[in-house]
Length: 493
Image 1 (cartoon, rainbow, N blue to C red):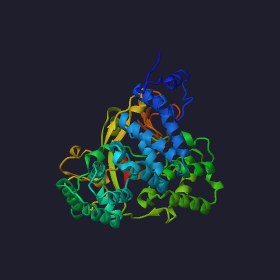
Image 2 (image 1 turned 180 degrees about the vertical axis):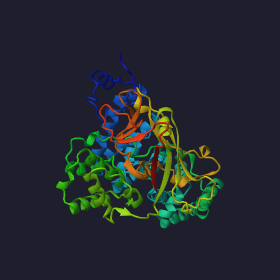
Image 3 (image 1 turned 135 degrees about the vertical axis):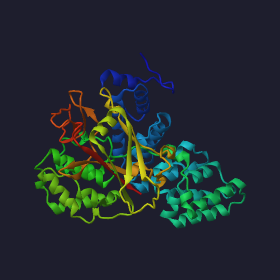
Image 4 (image 1 turned 30 degrees about the vertical axis):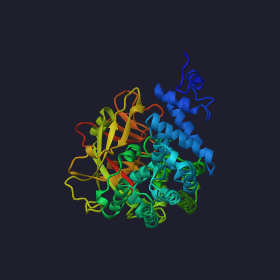
């Protein structure tokens, strides 16, 4: 059989992959066809290999070479628009956050060089690519308006309607004021454009009336970066190699993920930490955190972190002693919690459902006065024994899915700014355990109970075994056992 793509070329690369069981001969020229066909025909193993290939291409980008970044961005745009997936875009965003200067230069050339002819897909993509640095994009737009004062072009209106102007104002008031001043100087301004200008001003004077544009909401990532990452790539690495790899890996998007990766490695390789000098390791992590531009970790997270052996306990102590890594309070981070009976969560894995998170701060930090409080909802797609890849957890961004009694925080609905960890209740107290690097849930070999990385959801007396996985933390689900499972959701504002 011969598979034909929409472009008229034959998918020989795809067919070869099916024959060999490997992603062989993939390059930038044929990758799009292979990835598309793998997704269309739902060849899950090949889809995973394509994601791996894309990550390899990301890891090779270390400078400002335009064509290298262009390949990543265009593949992400294709997957987002054609396959309706933001997986590649999320990976590109994480990479670009580590090289913002190069990202800014790229966006200026990618869109602004031929701004009037840029597509709406490109507009949506750069809005997401810039993230909370929207003030940079506003600056580019202002420069364009200064050079073209005759009227507003359609693309200018589209950006103005879909960018988060409140975030721009908070980041850089000078840039925002220059934009509004420039718009006021346009030679010919229509009634619609004048209304647009007034709306921009209202967003600042009355931010509670701000409604996130639907075009942007549809492009917003709903996948938390640390979920479903796997630890396989780090297996076989020595401790020093692990630290170096984590320092540059595009998969590591926060200090939380970095620490959890080290914790898991030490969990499997107890006795390795003694070879490192404490101050040297702490200094290395501090340098990585500074270079990557990560937030400090909240002390409430690390203080309750599980430490079951000598190395993990020593490592957490090293991290906790650094004021450069830990903070007791951070106005740029908020915490939500979700708690349920363990057997109820097991049912969610099997049948799907919702995870509902409530704000930890009852003092009204986010000015919440609603009956059910500040709420974040995630929709869960269930796993299947024969296809664990179906399992998914996605942020609910539709205000209509939140009841009137819930405070829907539009300013926090950014999954790429979130980090999720699991909580276990042991001896009457809660402890945090990583969900990063745990992949997706899978059944044990008996087909009865579920495991998620090192976490096992089982009866109290069961012995569990997963193919290729080592569970080390049980969460009991027996009906008469009062077991609970919790989740901590940290959101960077």
